[in-house]
Amino acid sequence: DAGVIQSPRHEVTEMGQEVTLRCKPISGHDYLFWYRQTMMRGLELLIYFNNNVPIDDSGMPEDRFSAKMPNASFSTLKIQPSEPRDSAVYFCASSLTSGGASTDTQYFGPGTRLTVL
Amino acid sequence: KQEVTQIPAALSVPEGENLVLNCSFTDSAIYNLQWFRQDPGKGLTSLLLIQSSQREQTSGRLNASLDKSSGRSTLYIAASQPGDSATYLCAVSTNAGKSTFGDGTTLTVKP
Picture 1 (tube, chains in turn red, cyan):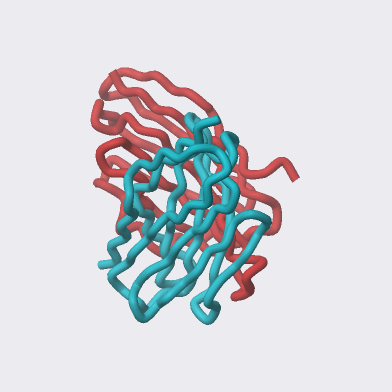
Picture 2 (cartoon, chains in turn green, yellow):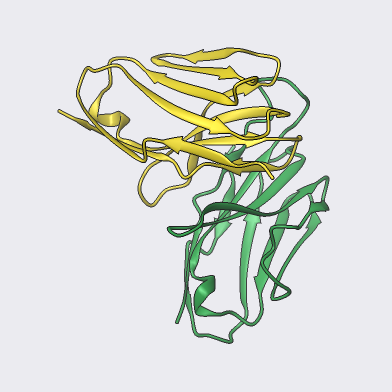
């Protein structure tokens, strides 16, 4: 398997523009997570899905952020309008959860480095 | 709200030394605890996962322990190598989905 795939790897945009980050989880995984990492706040969970259904979006900073998972192999995180304080690395991760030690492991994508000017 | 603390924030050791990284958490009602490695500019790689019913996990030179009652976990690295230089993060899950990460310990192993 190619692992978790994220695109784009780097995104530079201007304040006010819409940004869409994309994620393809590992095939067969039933959980998908979106995280944001900054120097100031560390790694924060934004939202996670189980079987394509959003379970907890309490980490989404504000209404400018939205996430969707239209099917088991694709998810998007959208920021509209973007602001300079949204600059961060955004990670997508997936896992197969069934209670065993060999599962539940979260596999991370390489991340998207977002810069909002 | 779960809080995860990792001490020290940075650690520098000579090659070959055994070392211990620490992770503490405030809510002992956890589902599992994971240790990750992050290289500069890269994503996170899972090293070890300990279920709430387990006390430790081992993989090669790595050993992770879990003491839920005291809210602590340690990651032991034996015979450290320069290639072990990275940031190590601890993540605690209080259900099957929601994880809280520590800020990490940045390890430098000097040749």
